[in-house]
Length: 517
Image (cartoon, rainbow, N blue to C red; front, side, top):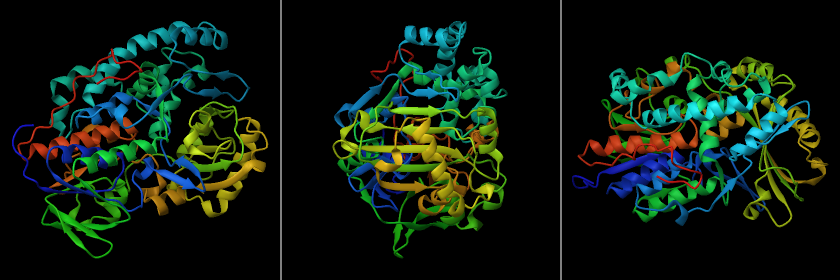
């Protein structure tokens, strides 16, 4: 660290992964950090849902690019292994096609080639070319996303210019992967990852081909206790560094004088002054509810209406009184995958032939359910609330459709008979209970016009002394990039006071599934 700590007061609004990352780093560098969280537990969408002895991750269940998480702990002088037990998942997941074929992508490249040749004859050379080409692309882009983009001029930095040939933002992810995989089902196996951003592979920029590469390069992991355990570990670090977490303490709004954020007003009526505010609430929700409109220009609610947003998700969290011998992660493609994806993006009703995802973590993690029982998590991509769907009417019907699919396609035999506890979460619930604007679970869409400097800036352009973290700012949605948003905002904030938070080292492709910095 350079300079001396001014002990300035930092108010962090929201204890999601971005807010916790920023709080860890700022507390480490001597700031007086207080995190205000509306709920009684940390994590936000990366938190836990606990029902009668069962624990479910609310949102993310895939831990990939774990080198970004290791980096966040390393920057506070800690080892990730001292806070979390990570178990590798290999094969990564089961991909189930409507005709009954199944594909089990794995970290083992020889096994991948064998599976591809068996299921998609003649296509394995494309896999090898993909892994070779994407290695260079990932190395370039991983360094680019770690930079802040506070103005258009930032795009002309040397690192960005060197990476421009690899952005491929003018192509769709689906079209780009056609250069490697002719068979549509194999292409789906390397493009469905666009759903991690709530996007269609036919609309997502080909920039995001790095997601599937990073899965295959670094592997996929499960933290014992669920991905919510990451948030708990981060909160522990914040406290160890002298930071305070005020849970069950909702913020009513930011107080702004002139253009400057000067603190937060709590729902209790208390005003808490702060020298800087780090905003980790859902971005569009915050612009509608936590900031008075007269303080906004570029991101005024009227302008936000014109922005693109991700899809939403229909969720079932099921505690069942038995175990199922099905993989940890299972993705089930609809009979007409492209039609299903179009319906998720623009239909006014949920798809009648949906793709869906099943998470069965109790298979390897005994901490999530009572002995001999399982905590099952089911997710279906559905339209966000701009669709006008009445989920109070549609939700129960869609639940029944999904349970039938789970009992048949997902081989969860007699599932209905074994449910002992259940929670359904619809797009309407994401909006009302989780304060997610339009129920768009993955925030602002990730089209090129809403990336880099065209996304809300980490050092917020509408309000001074206000910094943004989370999926609504650069670099975007997904846990690894949300950790980066926290690091970038903390770095920018500290630089204002002459404090240097050292940048992470350049990304090295030598990193393996064992991790590394």
